[in-house]
Image 1: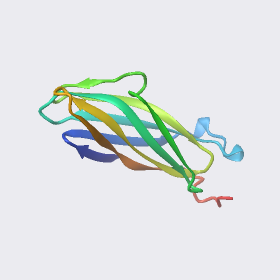
Image 2 (image 1 turned 90 degrees about the vertical axis):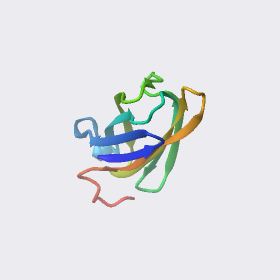
Image 3 (image 1 turned 60 degrees about the vertical axis):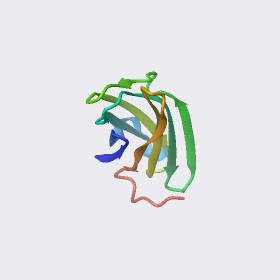
Length: 130
């Protein structure tokens, strides 16, 4: 489990390699990742948008930006949590992801909550990268 905290917003990430959906012989490696966002602060916050940096074993990086997560822009009162699962494909057997959420407090103050960098590793990660 990977974890960060920014201004009372705790973000935990649990990646999972999906072997049944992957095709290593075709350079197709699929991961699911489950994220839990917890508001440990004193103010209500809303997740407005996300930005991901996905880097494969060859060092190629893709930036993904969008509103909300899984079609939602959750509002978290103090003590509340929001949990979701999403996925990411790579053409290499390993890589990593990191990113941030744009959050807004009930007072209208926007800030960037860091999503911890997390490894995407498979049983195939030891294979030579061409």
